[in-house]
Image 1 (tube, rainbow, N blue to C red):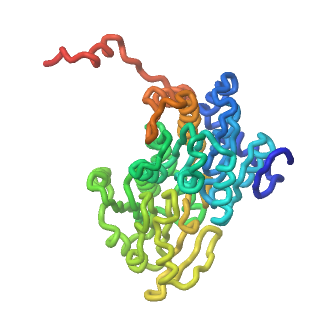
Image 2 (cartoon, helix red, strand yellow):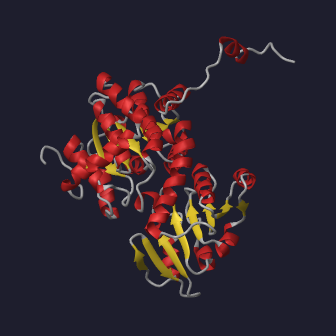
Length: 422
């Protein structure tokens, strides 16, 4: 290959990667429809786009849609362990998209790739966790005037961006794709719910039925993880800091208790909070022998791995994605999956294409929206207009062969009026 720079594991994997992304494309009819429209209309002609995302078959189809719309795209990984090397090779060889991503890349390489992406002077950024935007603001402030806007895929990234906005350092508009209903209601709940257990099962091959599963956090992702755990026959415990979410978990039929109590009885722990050290030193010390610990939140900060290393012997690698830590004080063994990173992407393939179809439709249309409204959106956090959200849902229903009812004119008038009462 020549003509543009890239950094991937093995270009020889391209044929396998092409098959993988074509398989995903079968389950992504909405993104496919957007790609076909983009090919005709070219709404992103010449726009420089940098995408910091999990490099998977699903995001590859988003990349194809953006390039079909005329975008000049560079793609980097948003997580060192989530890249599918064969897909990265296919994007480079088959679609001539510059990709800088290797599964298992070290943190130095990961950060270097972030700077590589920013050196292209992107006008639009697609981010998953806000690392690209944060680095832009901290270290490449001269590029900020070039930015039309950015999009953010995940809850953790939106939290960071809101903090940036509160501190007055967010000088451009951001579309919080995560906050679209067709994203967080489905990707977070059904995608995370299924793919997290896919990762746990691939990593461990343990029987879930009868196990006490502790779900740390009951947001949309936590709801999905808990729901699928119950479907597998687990006894589910939820821990929360939000009283409203805690009540919801109780009324959904789960046991709710503080993490200090759950730590003593849990068999499998899944963190899905987007916060730091929700499984801390005292919790790890309290866990019983053989407890399995994993993370389905975006960053590897939810489990205090530094504290675990301080209280345990050096870890043994038991299986490909399983490290065993023996606690010196108790002799108990703690099994950490995927180094505390996203277990569904590190040990499995991430969300199914059918659900990422909705998420990446949001991303593609968010980029189009930013370009279309260039210069008119104020700095800060925005969501896609409800009519775009509904358009995505309607396209998905059509692809599924499902029809729904429509309001009659009489019903529309009634909903718009105030005169009618008892």
